[in-house]
Image (cartoon, rainbow, N blue to C red):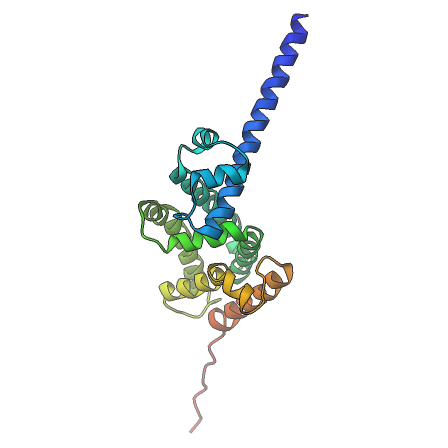
Length: 227
């Protein structure tokens, strides 16, 4: 009898843990959707609770407040974003250009798969706030470190033509971010949908062309005319 009671208690505990996990995931999903459509400032805890079908106390339990939810969204996005770069960075010795192309393919796929989160995060990063400054001082600097090392190694091995690293990062980041910062423009004006597989494949080819033509284009040496 005692053993049956213990088993029942374990089942109840597991169910409660699963419910807590499910409610947290629903809160995050609702927050990302509302932050993306209405903006962070235009979204209230009550809105998120209604969308996630939970009460405000549940949100407070998991995240404390709306700012806690914002920080979680940033952290969730950039932890996965940087893990993609770190994983592929280790293969740089096999070829710098190929390494950058693999990073590009995986980052683009990640952003397309998480378009609402990506669009919201990039838009929010344009605001000057304490949270954004903290993100810049941690994740953005780590990203810069990896890209700088990739470009420097490409110069060293003569796989890339020498350029200003800062301006290369501007161009590369601009290509990666543009469709998600301007996702509404792409959909409503150009009728292009960044969450579709066709877009991902087509746009990846365009970024790879930039890598080939801007970064990896070989310098043609002019031969001295024989007098």
